[in-house]
Length: 323
Image (cartoon, rainbow, N blue to C red; front, side):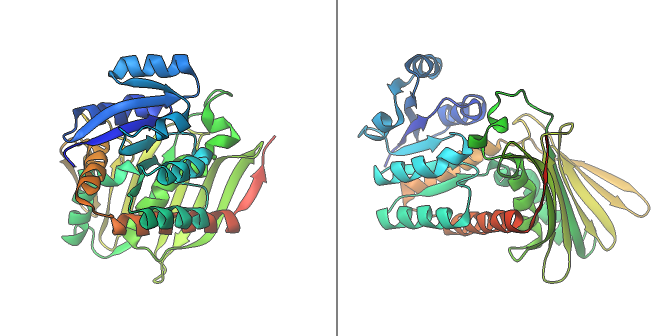
């Protein structure tokens, strides 16, 4: 396959700001069409990016000139349209979260495997090189033996009509909570369990929350997320001899140069890291895998573990119902 031909289901802001520009700039990719249920919206979006406008998602899935679908729809529509795309013979790059529960996620990955297709959850922050720098610093003993993790992803309140305020958006556990959850798994390992959690919910939508996790050795992960705060996107790792962390850890712009701060007893060190484009990196990984038949099994396994951890949070959490 010389180039992967993409169709986009929906005209979401994340597609417009980050993913489609990365797709247009990438090697071995072609943007063929974008679909919306609103013809005018599809035409306006398509004109902006030089592709074909399609009315209705099913019409796009029926096109033979599309190899892969990028799916940035609201969270609780992901499972339905991921399944439809796979059954239409398309590879799927789905925005996080892939779906709302682990059982559904396992079924979707099984369907992709049966059909010889690639399904990939687009949790882009994992593909930024700043996290590799953190991993290398830990391995070099920058803070001694790892003792724990703290992660936060919070945003200010949004207006009532924002998708984050609607049930179809899946709530802030799925919208922002999955970032520190996945980062905790990345650094403390896959065996984390939920020790406690509190979720603040209003009109059926999770607004914010706090989660405490632990691994088998008792190393904790303290996580905060939500839409009732000032903006913060950061994590910190605590060790026997110091601590280190990143700001703008989950959604840095591609021109942003991260700063890795290492705190020890007698000094603080700041390392300015190279800028990187996590959306371009994730897209390249997906496109190369489609072209070469790589199933990205490790990423599938990680997505399933994350979905199972979200299930456990929901099962164990204390719920505070808000007016």
